[in-house]
Image 1 (cartoon, one colour):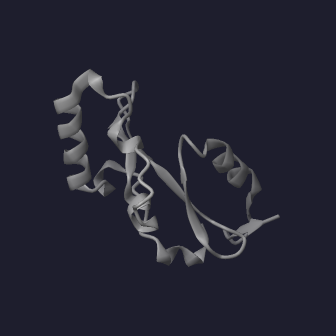
Image 2: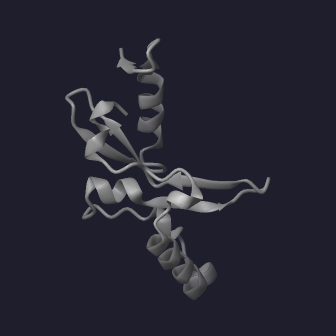
Length: 115
């Protein structure tokens, strides 16, 4: 993301940054529904959410097999060449996320440049 990122809230990347209300709501749904869920509560796509709300949504907030606690945002907010931003869903838009990563380059000052 560029310096224009101030328009979007910082995306949670550590357990401490995950909204406690979101964490509790997902935990309660998992406890209530158990194995009847076909989708992780954090993976749901809700087009009525704002860009900022999507930026805060977390798909995974749990220890992995190594015991390391990982956090995976549901959406990755990216800058468009025209200066706008959009949220890409980590599953549905995985190919586009990969394309964005391949296009991003960082110059000697740590600034992202596009080619």
